Image (cartoon, rainbow over all chains, first blue to last red; front, side, top):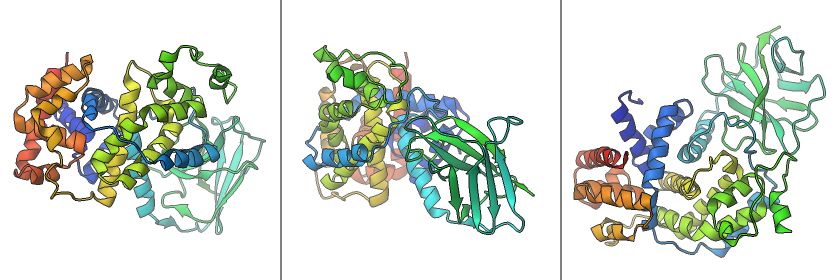
Length: 228
Length: 203
């Protein structure tokens, strides 16, 4: 529960930054931070104000292999950084970023429930805005989801399209994967909730997909899954 | 050459601003480097690492206590810094805090996940930071001075609890064990300490 009282909220934000909350409480804050601007400001206050205390930890030499590992992972893999010019719908605090990413990984890991295949096929037509003409079509049948482009769509240079599913009353999208550059994608199993009435969305992301588990770039196509 | 490399836009978009690479002082600014990292400069990432890795590794090591875990935390943090540099909102002096935030939360996450090398038998655990004179090791800039004055104004147990939590990454119950106090008491020390700090630090 995120309290409403301003003083309680400040204290909670402070405890969050200190790191004394247990995993469950910290996750509640992570989730609230995605939508609660005041709480984000309170967390940012404590991050800034308490930061000088970090000088009490003595600097130490990391193993020389650490930079090599970073270079290998980051540079050799050619993961592009997120464009600062692009939209950042969830401008989370640092703390929230690290924790939210971790929380979502756990969430995905512990929720392997999958939607059973529908009795009759579901179709979603994804377009930039309603009535704007179809750009993608997704069909969910007995053998899973098939996505194909109707018009030739290419993401910006060094970016990829990523597909998301948003269950009917869900507050957050579930990543379904990066769309291959040929514009075709097939998924054998779908997460729970990606069924009739759910929304499919496509956002622009780094080539390896969103690093946070939530869309980081603009959502450029959406469509609702309906029975045929 | 370097100037060209650093300011070239990977995606062809308009440069946000030219890096003043001919001024050595700016080379040592995490803010400037982080902005270049956001534009995809691998060289800037390397320089940022050269500049900040000892400080950040020290912060991680203090929390996780195991060198190999601290090295993993540092590595993951820099991968995240590379990917998320674009979300950093430039603000005077804020880059260092942004980097610290990433490393602290990765370190705390590692401790929650893998547990800490329990050094309860180590009498020095946390002690260095708890001594009042430890605060004299804080930097002399305005933010650090303000924090130091406000911390010194707290009751000793409130101050100890907050420092053990922030610097050593101890949870409520670890602090309780550490300073032999009931859990509920520690929780209220932290709460009241934070409330007093908030009042003291708010202009």
